[in-house]
Image 1 (cartoon, helix red, strand yellow):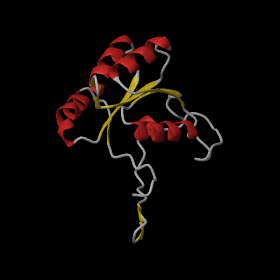
Image 2 (cartoon, rainbow, N blue to C red):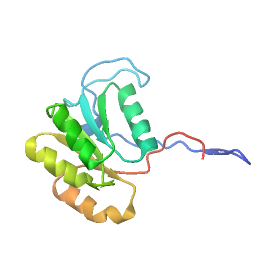
Image 3 (spheres, rainbow, N blue to C red):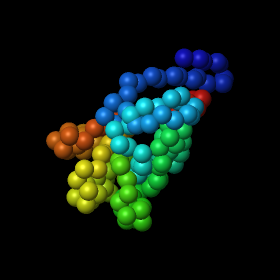
Length: 152
């Protein structure tokens, strides 16, 4: 942690990776270094309605070598999925969207492609029912906030 009076504070948080979701597939050079096996995940549909979180996660995933298609709502996610003919290896969605829920997005796309990998995320503590539903379906859940590295 770095803190300066009148300038703010900077925090660095290091989290363990989930090998199922983040295990790299091929060697590539990027700012994150050499990547190995990704468990067949290269193309990600990223659904997040908060612009700063969407931009940060999209940038981080791209730097790690993923091909990312962003969507900011339930409707935009389904449109992007259809526009790309379902050509995604994974869907990473926020739990709470302005026009639905991340679980609703997952239910639509997983019904079409049952083998699609999924990750649900939320920073809302009242999203507990969605977390329980995700756990029942064995969908990994990532608790937000996602730290963007900006000064607070």
